[in-house]
Image (cartoon, rainbow, N blue to C red; front, top):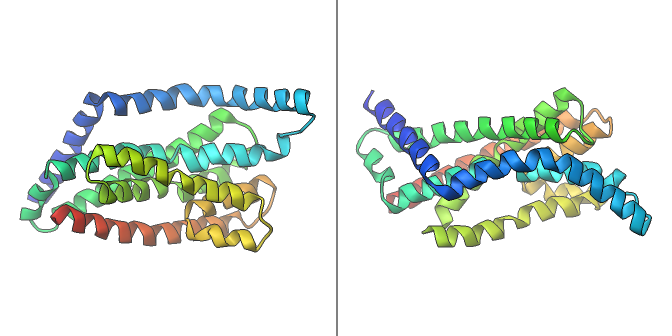
Length: 246
């Protein structure tokens, strides 16, 4: 019971810190602002490119939309919680949970679940709002589930390797390279592009592309993404625990 109370207290504290932090509030506002704009922006850019350079971007809409919906937006909950976890490490709040049996790991897993659910919902909702080059609804939901683990992965990695928020912002730029691996994979022939599957979010994007093209193998990519992401989350959770104990 004491562990449950401690975890609940930490989550309540995280919520209060999030609402008090202008940067984190700004990220939330950014999401709400960007989503309605993206559909019109993609259509406008497509029309301008066709008009000025006689190049049709429409075949690349699945890549553009999936980069936003699968590779970008699901990371935002991870960014928010990653900074909160880092702050908990900096002020040694997480060490307060080490005095009772396994509460710190419980807190991390509960936080990961919150990030997973938030990222999955954000993926599906953002896709529905942009509403361009979308796969069928069952596949979009599956893609949301496959993309969601990227959020806790990002948060745990950020909170583990960074020692303060200055370092965290530097690492954010470095971690942004991951999406470029997926973009490059789009242009590679199979099976060469499968090498990018070591980066789990690729599997979610691949499921998106297959489903949007009318293929039937998207579910296998969803499952592959969930399995590989689970392995990464377990490893990163242990690394964060080790860093928190120092």
